[in-house]
Amino acid sequence: MKYFTISEMLHSPTAVARKIWNGCGRTEEDNLTALIENVLEPTRERYGKAIHVSSGFRCPQLNSLIHGATQSQHLRGEAADIYTDAGPVGNLEVARLIIASGCFDQVILENVPGNQLLPQWIHVSWKRLGANRREIRKKVIGSNSYPVLTRKEVGL
Image 1 (cartoon, rainbow, N blue to C red):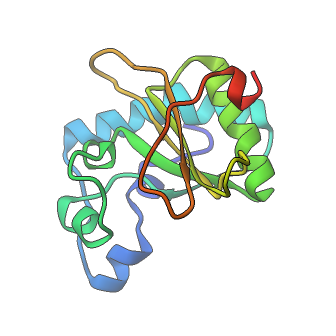
Image 2 (cartoon, one colour):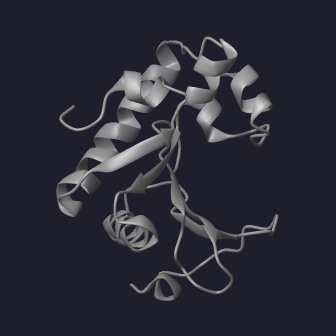
């Protein structure tokens, strides 16, 4: 893997601060590898600039501590939260690249302000086993809902 590593996908400042071991098993590592190889690496190649991982795999204790969804794909190593140095505009560009590729399970534009599609970060997932849904959603700041978006609504 050229741009991303498993250790990067396991790193969590919150886990370090709380002295939580955020390690994973072989299945989760295989899922992380598939996410990197199928989604993150090709997206980084197309984008041509750095893409950062703020959250990859989460052990159950870490996921609970940060109030993650009980069925979060982060628990299985199938998801990563990513962002760019270009902020929300760069994040949207990366989300569009992922969506245009068709190689994803779910893309969520996270913490967008109102009706604007300027995400503070992107949640992206990939299933190594089973069908990938190719689902696009957004989460508006202050809301608990995740409405579905069409390709057209994201500018594709």
